[in-house]
Structures are given as structure tokens and as C-alpha cells.
Amino acid sequence: MFKASLTYLRTQLATHFPRCVLTAFAFAICSHAYAAYNSEDYKRAIGQCLKVHDYDCTQKNYEQYLKLRPDDTTMITNLGQVMAWQDNLTGAIQQYEKAISRGEGAYNLFAYYADALGKTGRIDEAIDWSYRSLAAVPTQLDLRSNLAKLLVHQKRYYEALALLSGYDDSLTAHGEPAYFTAQRIAIESVIARYDGAQSINTASLRLPKVDKFFIAPVTVGDARPVSFMVDTGANVVVVNDAFLRSSGVKYTANGTLTTTGFDGRATSAHRLTIASLERVMN
Image (cartoon, rainbow, N blue to C red; front, top):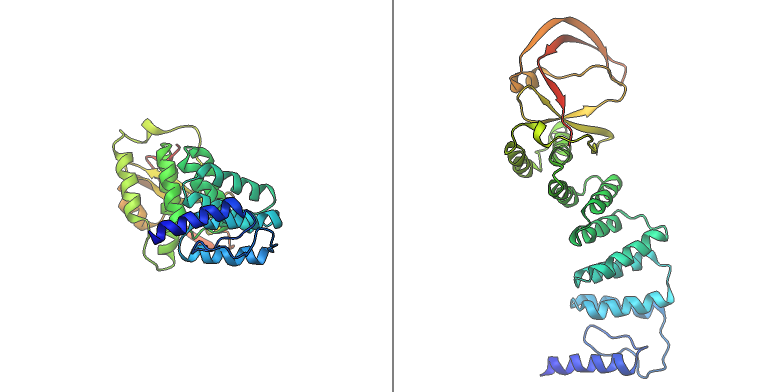
């Protein structure tokens, strides 16, 4: 009964005293309908509402705050997130787009926007904004995982695999364990259901970027796709002995040559002819 009374009190106060700010405990911080409150008052009320996860109260105070500070893009973004918590995704998207239209470029804004777009079925737009968020902060693991799922949903399997394996390769190169092993196995199992790469290939592939390099999935012989770093200035494909052995591909050796890396160092290498090497497209 006490809880019901508080809910009723808050409803009545909101109806009869629209300028009042309601705290998380459903009491108005104003004493009468004509009191004036500044933006800091509303900020404090927002904090009180959030403490007890009263998102309806939080939203109302954000809205009152933004009437006084309509160009505060951080608070616009926050209002959108509160709306998303209440499953008002249409309202959330409107707030995110308003913040972006006013020049806000925070990575978390892009991630929130991508999440809301994905949940409303706007998958291709969600993918684009997820990539933009990752471009700002590539270490967002949850976002990278969710983006891979969106790509799989659109049947862009190899792009999803490159997105995850490229990041994992970067981790292992620095002596850290791979993070996305299980998710990569799941995607590879989907690919394996098709009779070879040709059955799901299309004309283009968006390449993810990791550590300033673009990553492309490549198949060598009958081996599963692996990540290759794309060097736009290179005219040869370079693989190491371990990869060559694990791929099981047939090849013939045609002497040696000297290659020059991007740092200017010269390296001796074997010239090989491989039966099959294909950049995977999807």
C-alpha cells in the first residue's frame, strides 16, 4: 500500500505541478508549482532517480534539464540510453540522431545507436555504425562480438570471421591468448555447412582494420580461411613455414629471392608456386 501511495503521489505531482522535479523516492523537490529550478537541480534529481533504477523518473528529469540546456549532446545521448533501457527504441534512436546531428562523435554514442538500430531490424545501418564505433575504440570486445553476429545474420560469414580472427591474431602476436576462439569456431561451423567457399561468395568484402592494418580472410588449398594482413604496397604474398605446413597445400619451390619489408629491412625467402590461393569474398 505504501508503494502504491508513492506511485500515486508521483503521478499527482507530475499532473498538478509540472515544473516540479521528482526524486527517486517519488517526492517533489519543489514546495509549490511556481518554483524555478536550474539545470543543476535536475542533474541532482537524475542522480537520485538512477540510484534506485527509476528510469521513468530519470527520463522526466533529463527532459526538464534539456529544456534548459538543449545543446548538451552528452545529456541528449544519456536520455536516449534511458529510453532504450525502457524499450522505447524509436525514442532512443531519435535522441542519438539528434546528438549526432549536433556534432557529437563519442564512440559509445555510435555503439548505442548501432545497438538500437539492430534491435529494430535496421541491420545494415547497425553494421555501419558498429564499424564507426570500432574505428574510434578498436578494443570494444562486446561490440566486436555483436558486430560479428550482425554480419552472420546478413550471411557475411567471412567478413565476420576476419573481424574476429584479425583481432585474435593481434592478441597472440603480443603474447596474449585469443579472445574470440569459440565464436570463430561457431562461424566456421556455419561456413562448413556450405559446400566450399564458392557457394556463399559475392562480389565484395569489407575489410576490418586491426593495429593500423587491414585484415582479409584467405584460403590456401583446402585449408580453412585464415587472416592475412593486407599490405597495399606489396606485390607478393608472404607466408611462414608453420602456416605452409599446417595448410597441407601442395607447392613447388623455385629458388630464393630477397624481399623488403615496410620498415626497409631485407629478408631472404623461398619462391613458391602454390596450387591454390584465393581471397575469400562475401
